[in-house]
Image (cartoon, rainbow, N blue to C red; front, side):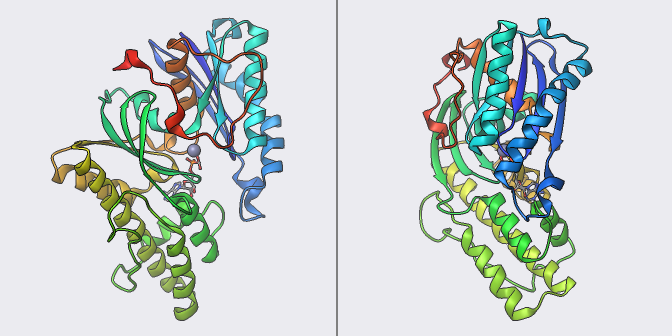
Length: 341
Ligand code: KG4
Ligand code: ZN
């Protein structure tokens, strides 16, 4: 079974072809970063218009990269939510229409399920059950995963998502959008003893998180200490340490509470080097295992959508002829794929 995956939920157009026997055959990504850079954040209308321009050419490129033609495909998977409604509708309309024209089924994929399953694009098997930490620009979720589609949300951010907090703090420091990776790079030169930021909601029980206060803390620290290069690096370091520590504490708590020894991290922020190191240390200290996608599949991409779509198509799911997008779509509303357990 060969599936074409289309991702257009935010500011990246991603296309890939996944074969259930041979694995990933081809993938292409077009990032809109330069398009939005002047505005310091994503402009939804510009994002939608750019997806309109880029999706079909990327599909052609991906087919060529795989050495395939449309008749070699068995299904089309597209991200139907959550995300920016206009951007989602572009991928949904193109995906649904191509599947209709090619007389193959189409399936609507949940973006965060795509992230969650991205480690399965690697050869290492990923055994259920596990705890997943999903950290992206729009979501911060701790999930108990018992099988594909069997998701129980254990905790989430009550305000900014982790990636959003990274980006907003980076903006305060004058870094370009998306500032997460740039802030993290700056933090490498910072002195970790210079400033100490709070670890929000770690002294109270529970698995919910809060990150918007750290951004305010960074703003106040800049106001009081200036914004020269070394001070900025020190602030970046203190911010990153606080975020990473908070996530480690919450993961440790979830693993303990649910008697689990396997942790999956996915989503854009799982590309953060410091977070990966600290969570690896946590997992080795409890004799557990950690899984994450390869770097390029941490952030948005078409491969994870093709993979998740393949699982759902194999389960007999497909969409009718209507084109729908779900800007808000809780991950625990997905149906379970029993055969996977
Ligand atoms: O999953 P993703 O590509 O898009 C969404 O679904 O939102 O995540 C993008 C987010 C951005 O906020 C970006 O700044 C953050 O992931 N990010 C990072 C790093 N790489 C990407 N944050 C911190 N450190 C990184 N190395
Ligand atoms: Zn994402």
